[in-house]
Image (cartoon, rainbow, N blue to C red; front, side, top):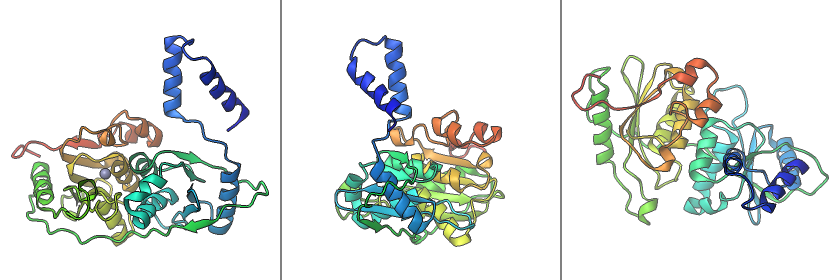
Length: 319
Ligand SMILES: [Zn+2]
């Protein structure tokens, strides 16, 4: 934190109730947009050591005993993953739902965040900060690497194949798949698999993939994550331009971020959902027109204005 930030924070704390309402609202909005980063000489030092060991794209969280870190994919091959996504997903693999406690601490990244990393942090962690690696001559904290590798779960058998372009028909298929999905009954209810299904359709309407939520295995493995990472693992390529993703439930921020990041052309991506999700996780996602993440991540006017997210037409309606 710089001196100026510290002063601003002190001024905020020192004058309760004296600011005009508009000024207070402005401050609240500023705080929501850009929470001040805590002082971080140790984080800068840790980042410097990790970057030296593993390359420029690293993310970490400083736990009570050890610093957990992950490296991004690096190299020239296309990937929707990043150090942030590998850290968050890998920690849920290592620690199960106890990772949520660790991830209440700030996540630090040496790179600007991508839509998937930001969505994962919003849904499954707390706060994300950019850190600049700097050598302060401090001893870096003991560190452990999180090596996350996505293992695609078995794809479900798709019960019907509506004609290409029959979006309502495909939405009905997604609903049926979700309804038939096995829900794990081990453990508490909140840890078991929520019944959600996602389908990937090529621009010509052909079925390219299907996936279910396996949230009981790893909290971050929503159906869309299994679908998009599964497609990337199988093909090494992004979702084709003009692809349609059909989901039984409106995507959360993490899934929306991944679909956007995984699309070869986000301006031509269509995500059709059969059932709305009124919860906060599915609000203001990068797929929503005019949302904060859309303004942040759109690189062209076409991407800014693309109607990516659409409710499914009623069954029987022309697609
Ligand atoms: Zn999701």
